Amino acid sequence: MTIDSSTYSILESHVDRVSRLEFWDNDIIYIKLNDNIHIEFEDSQKQHLYLKSKYDGINKHIVLVEPGYDTSISKEAREFASRPESNDMTLATAVVVRSLAHRIIINFIINFTRQQTMKMKMFDNKQKAIDWLLSLKNN
Image: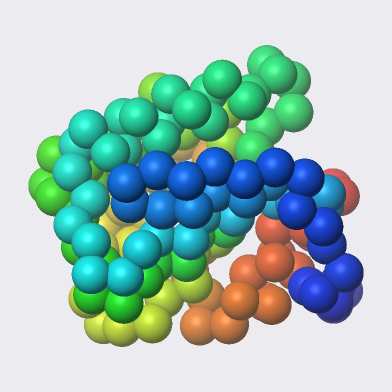
């Protein structure tokens, strides 16, 4: 199933220190991380609390993450993102990777989230990531 990613509408957006979040009308939450940014534990925690405020307790989030160029993440933020309680409101996360460094970090997080209910997968192509998320939502 291929969905034309240009057919969605942005229902709401939110900007924080490290990213722009968009809530699309196809139920995807798109997180575009800024270029040249180092994500700290506090950034991850604030974003988690914001997304938790948007969770209705029933319909789990499907999230598309696109790292910026030269985006890095602290050890503490990585560990926070890997915790089960950080992912209990998320059905699936698709990450578009652009570099070997991103691939290594995402592999690390995927290894920790395998035992959780949240699915996580990385993609070289944004459209394939969107298709995967929508296929999970529709099952």
